[in-house]
Amino acid sequence: MREMALAADWGQSRQELVPPAGMETRPACIGRARKCLMAGAVTCAIFAMAPALASAAIVAGRGIAGVKLGDTSARVVAVLGKPTSVQKHPGGEENWLWSTGPIDWVTIRAKGAQKRVEGIETSDPRQRTSRGIGVGSLLPALRRAYSSLTCKRGWLGLSFSSCWILTRIDGRRIPTNFVVINEVGTISAVDVGLIGERNLAPQLWPMSSVHSPFASALNGNGNLLG
Image: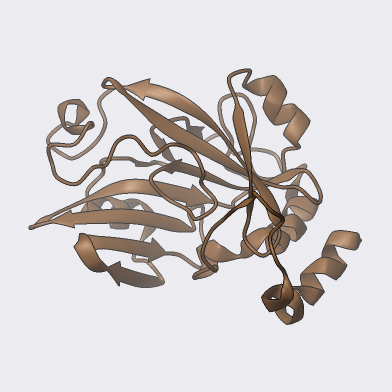
């Protein structure tokens, strides 16, 4: 397969690759969540036909696999277990990464003693939207499923497209982003919220404190109501 050959060459050639003029770029990959484009292509090729589990779900604008935007860090651990690694950044941002399971990456923002989920990413082909779209789905199927889809081409060593829909929640538009590998035309990852260097969707709702756009929709346990 051509994509597998490209994946084998990725480690040797990525420093030599130059993005085409006018194509938006993003920083280098990080952690397991950054398996990158061609690694995702191999996953897509293997799992494109994997059946969705009844409990597996990507809820547009809200969450993935039971983890929801606005959840506390304690609830994330209760659902997914402790992360394999944690990357801490200035401003109280933390990237929690898992090497196995339904979620690759969760972005958590700390504000004093409060830590809440701002973004979620999966490359698990079992996680699907209510319209059957997930990792391994083809771009034409994605377009058929979501007529409001917007796509923008980007560059992260290799060409990709960031294709997103916006869900209005509590007066804000929350992005659900589908990362499409242009070489093979399949989805390699799905993001909800503020996450991902391959997420080119407009980020319009910074959750910098507990007074976030989700605050009025949270119950006492940090779970989204409804």
